Image 1 (cartoon, rainbow, N blue to C red):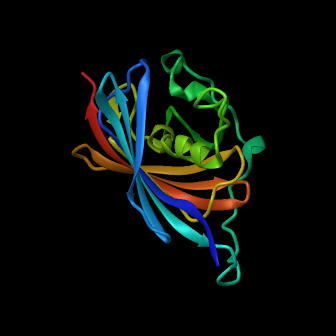
Image 2: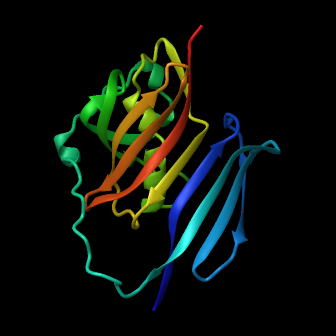
Length: 214
């Protein structure tokens, strides 16, 4: 039996910085279909495209095709983590849009990190964020929470973000189990396993450009 379509993958290309001005969003179905669809979206500021996204949607069956496999359990929940103190350099940034609970690691501690994140409010006025929106917003923090070089001495740019989902995310809290690898010549990859309270539901990837600060 046919079921609803599900976003199995979404990729963002960050083309330039997004200014604090009114933004225009357009979207279109690039590949229609009953089983698989490809949807594109564009974000523009003052007529210039600043971000582009592609979402792959696939049909889910209403009846299960096989017995459910055991869920990969989530790390210890948000209550077990610690809330990081936000330094002045991070004030009035996207970081403050989230409640955060670090189970391991920290923004200013080099290396892998495990952190639960929850949006504090809607991304769009009067529109409750869906679990998918919450998952994608949190997924963009993979490199930020697991950087392997000092933030004071290095600049990190992730020009893209790809999120794969095994199943629909659930609830408000999203956990990232994140790790970053950087080549000596300044290229790298940040990779995060994504969890909700039920267990693992996906993975995110970020390409990285890294250089020393002047």
